[in-house]
Amino acid sequence: MATSKPHVTVQEVGLRDGLQSIAGVMPTDEKKRWIDAEYAAGVRHMEVASFVPAKLLPQMADAVEVIAHALRYPDLIVTALVPNLKGAEKAFEAGVHRIVAPISVSAAHSMANVRKTPLDMVEEFGRIADLREAMGRRGPTRLIAGLSTVFGCTLQGDVPLDDVREIVLRVLDIDCDIIALADTTGHATPGQVDRFFGVLRPLAEDRLTVAHFHDTRGMALPNTMIALQHGIREFDASLAGLGGCPHAPGATGNVATEDLVFMLESLGYHTGIDVEKLLAARAIVQRALPGAALFGSLARAGLPKGYSNPQSETKAAA
Amino acid sequence: MATSKPHVTVQEVGLRDGLQSIAGVMPTDEKKRWIDAEYAAGVRHMEVASFVPAKLLPQMADAVEVIAHALRYPDLIVTALVPNLKGAEKAFEAGVHRIVAPISVSAAHSMANVRKTPLDMVEEFGRIADLREAMGRRGPTRLIAGLSTVFGCTLQGDVPLDDVREIVLRVLDIDCDIIALADTTGHATPGQVDRFFGVLRPLAEDRLTVAHFHDTRGMALPNTMIALQHGIREFDASLAGLGGCPHAPGATGNVATEDLVFMLESLGYHTGIDVEKLLAARAIVQRALPGAALFGSLARAGLPKGYSNPQSETKAAA
Image 1: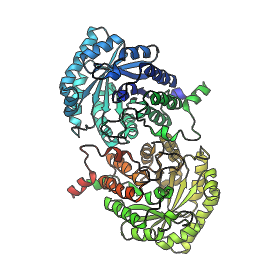
Image 2: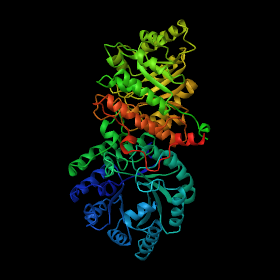
Image 3: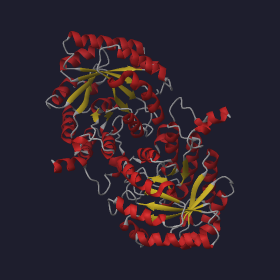
Image 4: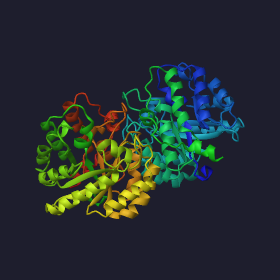
C-alpha cells in the first residue's frame, strides 16, 4: 500500500541552515546524534554542513567530521553547501553526494551577503561545475544551484520574476543537475509560488525539482502545497524549525521538518519518515542548544489523539 | 479588476469563539470598537455573540447590546451562536441575520459539553427550524447547522466519516440554509479534509459552504486550500488567532483572520478585507485583554517588505 503512494523527499537542513544562524556552537557529538536520530526516523536526505571559513562561522568548523559520520550510512544522501570554488573543492574531497551552491537572485542581498552580484555568483557556479568535471566528480557528486531570495528579500523587498527567470536561464546553460528555489526570508505567498513555478518549471523542466520554504509568515505549508501541484518533489526543512531570523524575534526560519512530514503524509505522499520519532529527536537539539528557540506547531500541541502513524502501518503491513 | 476575482467570505468569529475561552471579560465598548475596526477593514460577516446563560459565560452577557451595535451597519451580516431553542428565541428577537446552532458529531464531546447526544442536538436543531417558521423569521434569518468536532476530538480521538455523514444526512432533512463543518479541536489534516469534503459536498451540495478551521497544529491554512478546491467559499477566523485551547498552553485556536486573508488574497481570491487594517485592529484586543495570548504568523514577522496591498490597489483603480 504505502509504496504505491507518490514519494516526496524531505531533506533535513537543520544541521546547516538551522545551525548557521544560532549563536551557540553545537558540539560535534551532538550533531552526530542528531543525524543518527533523523536517520532512525527514516530521513534519507540531509544537508549537514557548509564549507565556509571556520573563523567566519565556527558552527561549521567540524564540517569534514560531520560529513564523514553521515557518510557511514550507505543509503543516506549527504549534501553540503559551498559558497565558492574553494569550498566546493573541500566538499568534493569530503565525498558528499551533493553540493549546493547558493546564488542570490536579489542583487541587494547578494552584495550584502557575499559582495558579489548574482551574475558573479552564476559565474562562480560555472567554475564549480568545471571543477567537478576536472576532479572526476561528475558521476558521484550531483550539483545543485540553490537560488536564494527568489520570492523577496528583506533588503530589496520585491524580487521580479524576470530577474529569477534570467538567472534560471543562465544556470540551465551550466552543467548542473538540480535547481532549487529558496524563499530565504519567508516572503513567498502561495499565489506567488504558483506564478513563479508556473513560469519556471516549463523553462527548467525536471531540473527544477526542489523548493526551500521558510515559515516566517506561516506560509511554508500552503506554499508547499502549491509547489507540489507544479511537480516539485523535494523540500528542505529544519527540525523544530531551527534557524529563526535574528532580526525578527519569534519569527521562524525553515519550516519544521515534523510539521512538513505530518502534512505530506496526510495528503497521501510517502516520505518514509516517522513523525513520532522526529518529534522525539527535538530533545537532542533542545539539550545541545539550551538557549535556542525551537518552533513547530505539531510539537506545541502534540499529535492529535487517535493519530495513526503511517510508518507504523507500513511496518505492520509488511 | 478586483471584482472579477472569485469572492471568498471571511467571517470574523473572534468576538464569539475567540472570547468564549478567555478568562477576562472584554468590556462592551471594546467589543464595539473591535466591530468598528473590522468593519472599517472591510469585514462584512461577523459572529459577534452567543446566547448562553450569563452565569455560565459572563463574557456573553452583553450579547443583545453587541448585536444591536453590529446591526447599525446596514451591509454587515451579523451572526449569533445559540446552543438551544431558548437561545434561538432570543437571537431571533435580537434580529441577527444568521443563527448558527452547534451539533457536535463526537458523542463524547457532545455529552461532555451539553449533556446531549449528537442526535439529541439534531432534534433540537429541528425545533429551532420550526421556531423560525413559527416566528415568521424564515425570510430574514438564515439558519446554519454548525457541525463541530467533525475531524476529531480531544476526548474521543478519531471521528469516523460515517458518523459525520449520518449527521449531515439528518440535518439535510431539516429546513436550514447552511451547513458548516468545524475542526473544533485542530485535529484536521489536509488529507482528511480532502476525504471528508469529497464525500460530504456531493451529498449536501451548495448547502455545505462553510468551514471553520483551528490552527492548533499549523494545518488551518493547508486545510483551507483543500476546502477551496471543494468549492467552500466561506471561512471562519479569529483576529490574532484569539481563543487558544486552555488545555494546551501555546496551542492556537481559530486561524488568525489576518493570516487567512493574506493567504486568500495572494491566491487571487477577493475578500474585500484590508490586511494592514486588520493588523492594526489587533491593538484593540491587546489593550482590552491584557493577559490574553495573541497569535498569528503575519503579526509576528510583519508584512513582507515590498508588500502590495490588494485593497489599496482596488481603491487606486476605482
